[in-house]
Image (tube, rainbow, N blue to C red; front, side):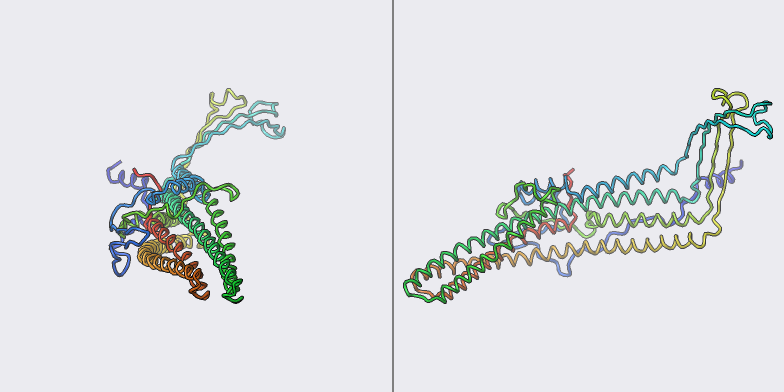
Length: 480
């Protein structure tokens, strides 16, 4: 064979790969998440230290350990080990990897071996099939080896493998996204559970204080210093505080059930130890990844990119389905009336077959399938863009919340401190008979409200940190 025809033959047999070749999307050019750069430090409050924002710093592994609470660490570890969403994502990954391996195996030659034994009664009016006069009842033993190999002339099989592997990669990132969400949700659930316990304690303290005031007012009523209206007003305040308690207890029960489900437990099972708000610490430094790095850290963005890769490969599969396909097959075996004679004498047989198929008319189905694949690719591009924008929005919202909620916490601390001081002063004045009951009632209601608001502000402050780590795609894996 001359060199040029040989090169043509090799190129033909090796084939080309139709369809678009996937190129990962370019990293975003933006260098900021918000129109105005946030302050480099989150100010301290009376109960929390300040935090520095380190742009471009590396995210810590197992970010929830930055809160410095062993009980919280154990809760997250238990959730990652037993959560059902993680188990589902892990099973989906194993399924996708097996399907990718199966797709890769379909590109290799296929071989099957078969054996058949038969017993036949032939018609006496026909010629004897065994060329033995007078023999019409006979047996046959047949063994066949079949080998087939579809030539991947235009790369349809290669694109199919590429798509399956990209789908498996997307499943791997979805598993990591599920783990990240479970870790963050467990942290947030533990924070909310601790906050509800503090709210219940604050409400119970308010109820106790209201009962003490009511007892004092009744003493003054018996002495004729005040009338029934003053006592009735305090009874109403006490009833209002007592009415708020069942709702908080109900919310705590719901929160503990939700936490149990995150841990993969039945709600009837006792919960492990949960942290108190006072035992949580804010990290001194919060890393903030650059936008160009964020798209490589966020597992949901990486999953969208892998899905985009799969959609790109599917276009090649659809194009190849409209082009000629070549298949090669071979078979060999033996056939005889006795098992031991199948490969003796002239009993063996073989055949070689080559075929080419060109789709001619399928009612436009193949063309429409290609258009559908191209539309799916456009959708995957938009999906990726949406994932990137969503990631940027999550970080922007988290940064804004950190500063705004730090200011809200500082205000809540001042308000609660002032309300507590005012209530203590008025309670002292009441014992001396130097203050009216209306002022005391107002102070009691205000103190109850500020105490609850302070707990909410503290819980929100810790939750903001968890939200930032989740928005940045904080890893749930150990540091390597």
